[in-house]
Image (tube, rainbow, N blue to C red):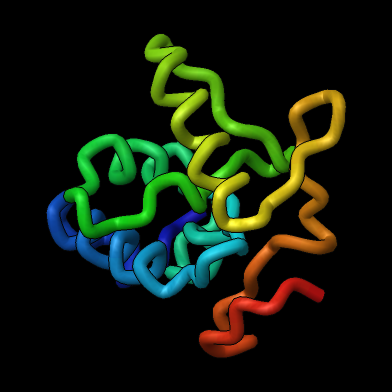
Length: 119
């Protein structure tokens, strides 16, 4: 199974491409790690997207990237998980009792354009 040429970029190039996609996510919307990888033509590279997000600069709205289950991804730093939820809620994203986001409402598809209005 080979990756497209787009996936063979250096680590820094891949990170830049990930961050460019994340910068486009409108407030009040989210994308998943896998969805970003697929959008970049790199299916199966969700973990690589997660790695890129760990090093994102302050200008990247990191809080708008969630797991494929619509949850904030587990990490050792529990405070950053709480901060991610606070930021999403401040943008109008709602969580259910289990801490999930309804991806049918809040998932953003880059082909939609820059519209931030949830379905």
